[in-house]
Length: 409
Image (cartoon, rainbow, N blue to C red; front, side, top):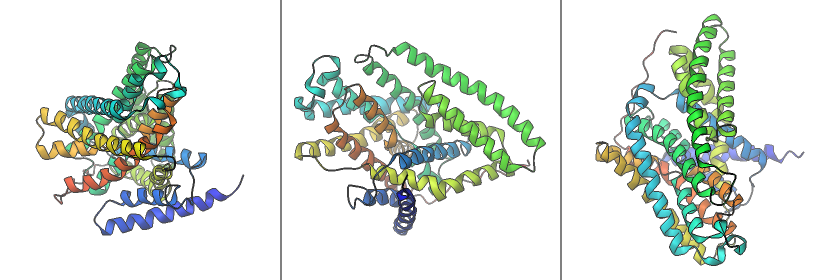
């Protein structure tokens, strides 16, 4: 095994920090600079670094930690209060991008791009176009979470709705993906997938309550060993993330977020602050920069002709507008103000790694041609970079969330 990964890490950490500070000078979130750093280092521009299994795995752990810490910082009561609104926001934010992606595919998807040019369900243009819509329904809230935390807006009304809607969006996206893939893979059963989703949340509630009680009892007995408390908390996060993805078919980041909510309900005062500081440190120093840079590293522009480039531009525009309009309309129907509705819509724009995962699954089933991966990656990168910029603009009132009240341990 070579040692190039050490040089890659050094370049990623240095460039993301430098460009993050540079973007901050222009009053933009540091996340923007980190994303641009990956784009510059990757094959799209300088070609210094290529994505490897090591970087991909590290990035995956990074997004899990981001969602875990966001769960720990979430106001559970506010999350409960906005549950019904979040469902309507998520539903509108799935339906409009689904229709938009299908329409774009209808006009731009050339018949010569059929997978292996084979007839049947997996080769029909109709299913390919539907699948493009499903890709656009995805929401990666990790970028939004990091930006809202940096802006001091994570615990506000819009932040709570975005977090809740993103989880529901993930479930709805799984359902839509399952329905489409069932036409090309006879082994996929829609009702079984729906049952597994329900079972996951039942399991998460039961496991969360049990862990919360045990964790409180144990931490009371071992108050002086807070390092052990952090390790056990992270183990719980990793286990719930693993079970969510491998057993129940729900995204691992959803499991990580739920684990964070459990910890938020299990720790208070200085204990909670200690845990948050521990995970924010490792995320800031190592995991988050690799995750943000990895998105830019996946961009490759070679082999994209004028038709594919135009397709990528239109698909990106539709991806942005469909989330803003869809989620914003859902928020307006729930009687949120125009400003809050716009904030919620913008917060749901980023597709991130979720869209890439969905696209990869579709490719394995013959629902998307390799030539269409270029436009999908363009959508992922552009929506990821533009989300923190737009969030900065729609939250430009200059106020921050009040700090969480300190309570005795």
